[in-house]
Length: 219
Picture 1 (tube, rainbow, N blue to C red):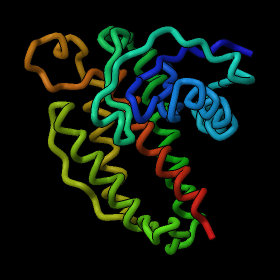
Picture 2 (picture 1 turned 90 degrees about the horizontal axis):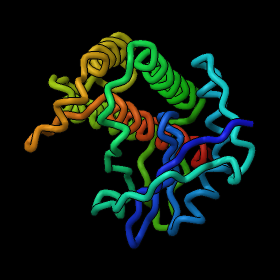
Picture 3 (picture 1 turned 180 degrees about the horizontal axis):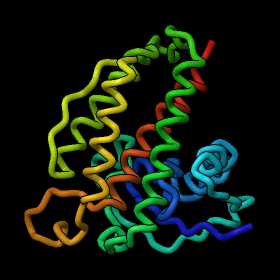
């Protein structure tokens, strides 16, 4: 087992436990203890994503998650998405680390695609009849990524759901923009650019969060 370094993004309504170096490995809870416990529970679901990138993650239990810092969240945190950067995000990674981050993001995309392929169009609704069906979730993920691209110095149009060629081109463009992202621009007072570490973590969390949602809502 290897210790996994984690930070907590906190708000009165929701707390996120996020692994610094494992994009997509982030879960939320009502408080710190439940966020850490949920992250530990989801290790078994994240392991195949890491393995597809040629990496092994093995915290073993909540005891293997080492909390290094707590960061005050914001309205986005309370709403249900991790949104805060860490000081570590402002450190420009070397080329090999960029390759590792991008390999993990690619694995998240692959996992999402496989879940979508294996799932029916109509998903189980919530207790009040809410929740998107499969195609609308796919469209939502693609639209969000197109929106995120503006923080990477480019402006992508969202591809249509299930347009394999367009989605591949979309992801390739995102990957190139991520590789070229310069963490130092975030130090500029009015910069809205995202450094690669934060951007990959935000993209990967969103992709896997909806992949796991689809899995959990299968009939």
